[in-house]
Structure formats: C-alpha cells, structure tokens
Length: 416
Ligand code: AMP
Image 1 (cartoon, rainbow, N blue to C red):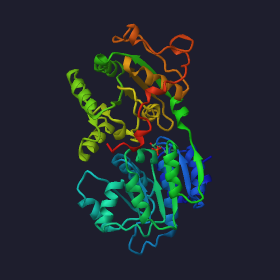
Image 2 (spheres, rainbow, N blue to C red; image 1 turned 180 degrees about the vertical axis):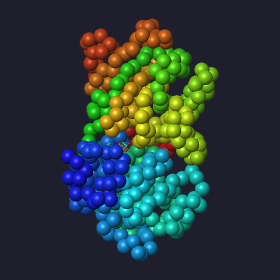
Image 3 (cartoon, helix red, strand yellow; image 1 turned 45 degrees about the vertical axis):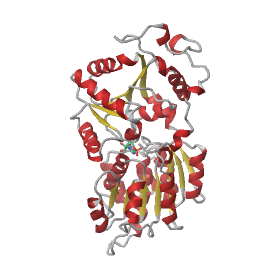
Image 4 (tube, helix red, strand yellow; image 1 turned 135 degrees about the vertical axis):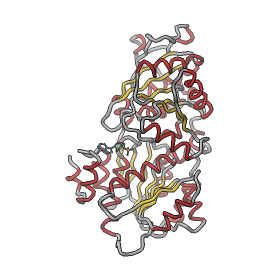
C-alpha cells in the first residue's frame, strides 16, 4: 500500500514524501482510514511504530478542510504526552507534515519559563502539544481555552499513569467539549489503562500493533555476564571496540546515570546524562548534542528516554537490566527504529538474573550470551540462569514472578 491509497490530500502527501517515507507503516495503514472517518481510536502501539504520523496526519487533513484561515486561530486539536522530549518530538513531526498547509502548532511543557510558550499561544495556534502539568497551569492562568477542541489525543497513556498524571488527565477531560474525536494510545493495556480509555473514547475502533516481537526480532541482542563493579570497564571496552556512532546507555537510577558519565570520563569517553533531575534546557541540549553526533554516548533513565527518536542510533546498552520486562522492549526499541536494524547489549550481574529470565520469557527468545569478553564472570554464582535445555541458549523455564516485586505499584509511582 502507498500513502496515496489512503485518501490523503496533496499537501500532506508531498510533506510525507519530503520525509522520505515510501510506504505507510502498519499502524498508519490501519489507523489513518479510521481516523479520516472521524471515528474514535484505541491504539495499542508504542513509539517506533510510526504512530505519531498515524495520529497527526488525519488531524491535519481534517483541520485543513475546516479552518477558516481568515479568522483568528483557536486551539482545535490537543495532544497530551507525558514527557517534554516526546512533546517536542511530536511538534517537530506536526511541523514537518503540515509544511504545505497554513496550519500551525505549538508545544508547551514544564521546567522552563512560560513566557515564550505564552507568547506563541497569544499568536494563535490550531494544534497544541502539551505535557499535563504545564497545560493545566496555563489553563488556570487563562492563557488556554479548551472549548474549541475538536480533536483530542492522549499519547503514551501507560506512561502517563506510571508518572502519576492520572489526576491531571481527569482535570483536562472535564474541560473538553463532548463533541470531539478522541484518540488514545498506549503500549500496554492493563486494567487501569482500559478504564481510563473508556472515560475518553466513544464507540471507538481498536488497532493493535505488536512491536514487542518485531522489535525484538529486528534488533541484534546479546547479554554479557559481568559483576556490578566491572560494568563501567566493560562499557568502555565495548564503546571503544564497537566504534559505534551513537550509544544510548540505560541506567536504572538518576544517580547511577550520573556516576556512569563520571566514570566513563576516566576512560576518556565523553558522555552526557539525561534524567528527571536535569533542567529542561540541559536535557534538550544533551539530546541535541547526541543527535548531532557531538556526543557519542548518552546515559539515560527510562522515563527520560522513552520514545526519544534518534536517527541512526547504532547501539543500546542496558547497563542495568530493568525489573519490568516490557521496559527492556521499550529500551531496545530505541535502536532498530522503523526499518533500520540495530544492536542491543545487556549487562547482567548476579543480582539481575531473575530479571533476565523474565525478559526472555516476554520476548519468547533467548538472548545470546557472549563469553568472549575481558570481564566475563565465570564464578558459579555469576553464571546465567539455569536453562531449560540447549546450553546457554535454551528456552527459559517459568518466569520468576518474585523478580517483579512492585510491578502493580509502578503504575502510580510519582513522576520522575
Ligand atoms: P514514531 O513511532 O512516530 O515515533 O515513529 C518512529 C520513526 O519512524 C520516526 O523516525 C518516524 O520519522 C519514522 N516513520 C514514521 N512513519 C514512517 C514511514 N511510513 N516510513 C518510514 N519511516 C517512518
């Protein structure tokens, strides 16, 4: 299927072509026709699937037909997303896809002064991309009215709940007009998420894209057994020997991310960190430097990195294994985006073996173990989890549920 088969208008087709997209991705192919019919949509998909174009393109097409460009602009479409980085990225996409139309957009998020954002709102915008806190703040101050919203998107709903945004979202919902088209996206569909979707959607259609398997299949994965103390040594060895253009390193904690950056400096490897304790300008700058190739190693926590779209990201390193297996899939999905393939390396210490077992169970695949490395730990207690047959590559037995102690609680964790 081609984009021209989807019934899109010429200015959008041209913009899509400029982006170098030749064919719609599965989520675009399935969602765009539903959205052009103005149906509500429940999209079970994560970033990396092309979902931003899937939801922004139909909104642009509707607005282009509806907006009277001689009148003062009103906010007609609202897209809420959990992190500032995602908000910026969505707005960049909108700017790219709307470049041959007269539609405009702006983005608002917390952690920076509001003046610029308010000024741009005062100019008048058709589409607003926002994180929940700043949105409510500016509504409260009278700079934003949601009374003309015709299109509403809640992006990354699972992450929203995970970051404790549920009350903010409910407040926003109260302010939205009843007559609207609503879109709801989430990578997972746990009961609290389904419940929230029911509050938002009306007679919706559902599209499910399962990137879990596809991502996991596309990315070349491996695991290195290494003691906690040797992890930085191994990381520097890999960065130097792999000569990767860009390496995204995941740390479980903000403090850990800073420490990795400091220790890498001792190995003459410049790196930067992004996480919730860094100021917004510092996060944006680090990301821009990384995207531009000025810094080849970026160390991030999950919240800061989720959904970040980095072209040509060649290597993802799980410095710490996540205790929630789905997070592993989100992380390795940073490489191997769209049609590219990539590499993901995971470090596993003795304490993390049960996490590895759960991950392998989720992706239904055994991650190859690399023993030919200077820091391989051969002590029995550091050995990989017992395999269900076929040496190191055998299928894992039943997952160890105790490895995910506070999994339920995580949905309501306070924001990063
Ligand atoms: P997203 O899931 O929206 O974050 O998109 C993931 C990546 O896929 C981004 O780099 C997009 O620019 C890219 N992308 C989106 N749609 C297509 C397409 N139809 N063909 C190729 N790349 C695409």
